Length: 242
Length: 98
Image (tube, rainbow over all chains, first blue to last red; front, side, top):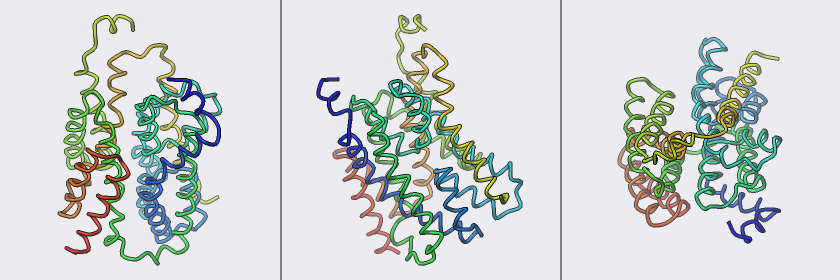
């Protein structure tokens, strides 16, 4: 790290650089916010409940799963457990990115972890790869616009969702997989990238068919992580020090 | 408050615990074993892949073509050009083939 990167590590410039990084995320996630609001409304949620769910849980896939179950006669604790299961991958994000946040204060950590969604984690990891510090200003510049638009879109969806034109022709159901693929490719210079991607890909597809969603995410992810842990060369010297 | 609101709030607490929990557990250890370190470094590629692979498996020609174009463009450029090119391919093919 040079004097330069320390100099740029504060102030509004840092916040705005985070905002810029979030632009593709905003575009990719926007239709889902609207879609969530729409489906919530159709499932009998009040506008308040739809907005509350987006504002407090802030995790698209798990919100959809939650909605799905509200329509059935499933016990409340089971719905909560399902939301937990879908979001379990965040435990890995938290452990991984937490290693680079030791310079944050406790309140910054408490606030910051709330915003640790998939793209937030991936962009933060890219930042680590660029050897730039993850400043709190940059992190919030990335996270706050995504959060605010998610909440607003849910609200608009709940109010006006039935007016969305043909979502299939606009490709909105497949924008997030494309975006996630782009993120996966962004990490291609990392050690063991190809073996990890291949293993997690095959394992998640197998688990998707054998075990079912959402467990394919945790199972597929663990397969890649465990592989990397075992095949990455570790010098005996390093092993001694632990 | 309605049951729905309680379920939402409980879901929010559980979600927050997953986001803070990994760090809370890991930060209790003064040193991280190099193999754990290697595993954690693989987390981005491992988890994000699982969000793509099953969707790709279920995709038809437009979806798979878009992903293939995305891989090629992404290899030579960055995330933004990759995303917009692949999305354009997807929308075009869906409208042409649909």
